[in-house]
Image 1 (tube, rainbow, N blue to C red):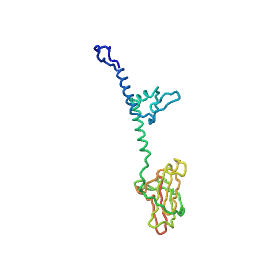
Image 2: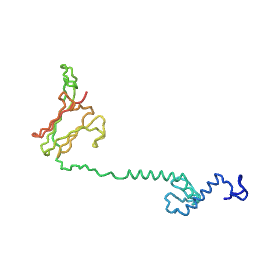
Image 3: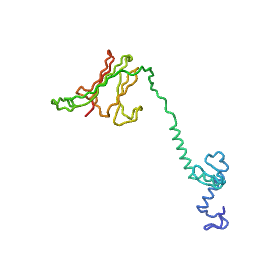
Length: 232
């Protein structure tokens, strides 16, 4: 670079280089350094098009020769995109890592079919409020519910039947319908049975003071009975 004959410099001495000349000199030095240290054959982002030009597939830039491309790889834009790509690849690799195997042991047993059951609709006028206070005769509102009796003659020893309520979005057997929910009853070795019931709020047996919500397992007759009421 010619530094002579510049304003502010002495004759025969180095002139003061401007910002443009400094940048050109820096890019040229980086290009020469890159030519000596970088193997373009191993660069995954370089692409030579049908016109003979070079393209950077990472930054989507076009370059006339290898020197221009190498100078670009040392620039801020290319380095920033490399950092972003590395962060994205690292995040994707973390998502692809398989979760640790579950330590919960799933029970495997031979199912013998569905148990026998009977479902009875309950409709009674309740003479108690939700706090257990007795109301005048005919004052309490009518409430509806269901009484379910499940006969389990071949239930396993020391197994107590279980029940739970499931929303329409938890099950995978039918298309979800917000108008319904499901009552699930399970007891080994029988198949789990489900009853589709209206999606109404159900009273909590633990908070019921009227005695209309109850459950009972009779180990002698092998019958599981329970009743629940819908909240008004």
